[in-house]
Amino acid sequence: MLLLDIRNLTIELRSGSNKIKAVERINLSIKEGEVHGLVGESGSGKSLIAKAIVGVLNKRWKVTADRMHWRGQDLFRLSRKKRRQILSNEIAMIYQEPSRCLDPTSTICEQLMESIPSDQLDGNLWDRKKQRQSRAVALLHKVGIKDHEHCLRSYPHQLSEGYCQKIMIAMAIAKKPDLLIADEPTTALESTTSAQILRVLKGLNQLKNTSILLISHDLETLSDWTHTVSVLYCGQMVESGSTEQIFNRPHHPYTQALINSVPDFHMELPHKSRLFALEGSIPTLQHLPIGCRLGPRCPYAQRECVKVPTPHKDHNHSYSCHYPIDYSQEKR
Image (cartoon, rainbow, N blue to C red; front, top):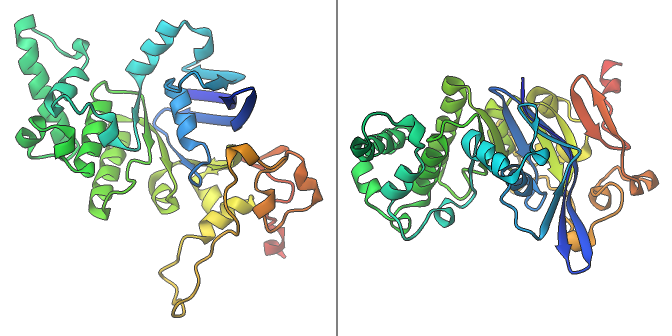
């Protein structure tokens, strides 16, 4: 069963009298128990999509879609109160910079206890505080924080980024969400802490059947335990399919460039050999190319690329490119 089903999501930035399409006609579907990876360079619109799903974009952004269904309900047709109730109870998000998202004026204990829903507590009202404290300790243990006493009485600025990220995960899973959106949860963290956080997320998916939308620019992370992957470039969805399809037989030149940019340490590289990188840089929102936005950087670009490519679909593997990578010569 589909948890989240989005069709033709467009996010526009209102700048004076102009409207800039930061995200254009994005399709995204997530099933129960699925880990879906969203990958792309910085500025491709990954975080905007996540924030549009949970409804935290400010009034400068205009969000439209042909369909944004949650368990078959169209979120755009619900009242604001009903939509917020569904999103707050069933969808949780881990933000990219946890230390900025936590309240600097409250202790971790106060913030963590506040995130625990009242319907998960039972017994008398005067016992609720002790129940919340014990529940907060259990949540910290679940995300790998053993020294809970020091953590609970601390303020966010007194803890490391790794601790704050784990606390954000603890607050997110306190409501037992059906969908967890992780916006680059391992950014700027050391490798040991990153591995711990990814193990926590993987355990939630395998043990609790929690669906996860994992946003990252690290292809190696996505290849390990995602079921499906969508590739974004400059606000456009260029390719989407199963993880095996995306990594083994990519059809879009940008997807192939991302895969080639990951160094293969199993090969003996010559001393001071250059790593692969796609020429050029991602354009700004004020100067977006017409047609296929990869055109100015694409090594296969031709005159036809000034038109928006038509999406193609082959065995649940979709891609948008006028000149996709052809694997037919492998059979010859």
